[in-house]
Image 1 (cartoon, rainbow, N blue to C red):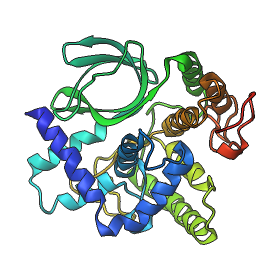
Image 2 (image 1 turned 180 degrees about the horizontal axis):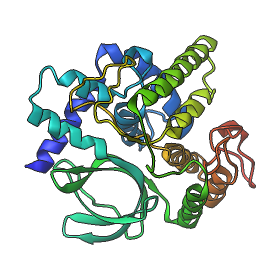
Image 3 (image 1 turned 30 degrees about the horizontal axis):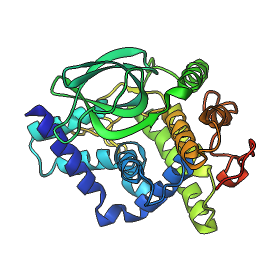
Length: 326
């Protein structure tokens, strides 16, 4: 029953994200996602899978502009849902705040479940399938990009998976190792006053909104400015001392206990960078995927530990390793 309920929540959130009020933000988010993970064509065999990835990126990770107080679609749903859902129903949705978008490795199959290792947090989890999905095709030691939700005491994967070739396993492990050494990776060790958090967020969101408008007006489809903005969202401390932090930019001291406040994920550029490599390895089958992943992970962006795969390395600039693209 829990698995079915979990799946229903995912479906409801997906439908909510398609509301007209998010149309403009969705267009910007889609451009950002395409820039950071690679352009997908509707005739690609993985088109549907990548669209699921974008959908969940837009719902859980993309932060909307100031008109939405910098919240995610998920947070906006929770905030608005307080007026039409019971506390018990809101509590069910609240559990989705604990999602982990990470790189996982299959340790072994256990009946219908998978035992996986989270390569970034270095922990082992037993994960169960949702009714509409199965883990068929997941090989031992397979590394994949996935989103894990703990719901009613059990772990589930959503339908978003990006599988990486076993040939590049050692490169991914090295990229993760370098990422964990970098300054961008941190654990929640500090607490700050919620008013200070709002002030920081107000300043940050003003910058985000202005830069989004500049990009939109300039029409620069290959710009990576939005990616850099998204990275900066991870720099704020993670733990808030007051549960009454509200996502609005006003200084309200009283708020519902069910206030949207999902964590910031500084691993997102790493995950997107590897996803970009995966698409490039599909586009250029005549090139060893090891070479492509090495190219994507041997240079850093402005923040240490983030693979540089969306800047100065476009598909039409890929070096010729002895053959030309078909």
